[in-house]
Amino acid sequence: LLMDPPRSRIRHDAPARMGAAADYLVERLECSPQQASLAESKMLPNLAASLDSATADHVYAWLTSRLDLDAPQARKFFLTSPTLLRMPVDKLDDRIQFLTARLDLSDEQLRKLASRLPASLGMLPASMEHKLTYLERRLGLSPPQLRKLVCTAPGALSRSVEGTLMPKLDAVQARLGLSDAELGALVVRYPTVLGYSYEAKVAPSLDKLQAPCSLAHAHALCNMHMRSATC
Image (tube, rainbow, N blue to C red; front, side, top):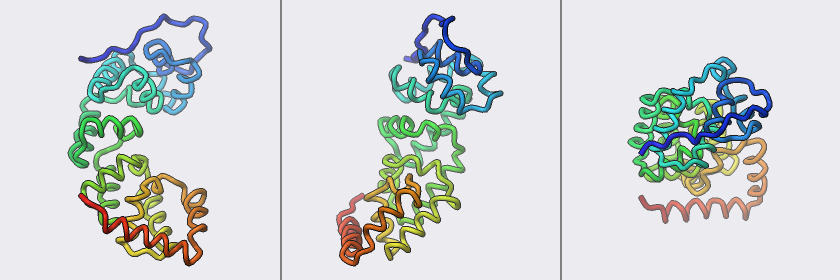
């Protein structure tokens, strides 16, 4: 069954908001004015001001049904990515079908991935394919390994290949002296490395592995994971 947005009374004492998107989030999804204002700030002003409530209701009902989201989950989803309330359902369905087929996702895996990165449903399939193909080839990943990586660290889909993923992986590989296979094993074991800033998070952590015994331990971990990996 399609779930309608929760309805609440219009709050005449609420502080002034920037546009129709914040009004919708407060009046239909029962968000606080502060939450709605913060969410609306993620949208271009003209898009926020022109949100059509009938369109938003249709998107809300369809997407919550398709992903099996309850009201609190849906509220968090649209506060994170309010622009999706404007997106045509057929385009949302295109993204869902792409992710499901490309990664062989179950309904539960799709729900978790989309909930962790709602913006993925606003990305062009061609852009996501470019990133997935790069990770698959660069790290030598099997389909199950690619699925596990993206489900664990979906933020990789929001990163630029040339601007972020490529230089980060190259830097990690060079810093630890890993082979391509060892690099792939390391990222499969610790996929969240793809979501961290190299300068702020990854490089300081790698400093701890510069001692010969620590570096040898890193290689041992990679080799152990490669031997134990299964599809």
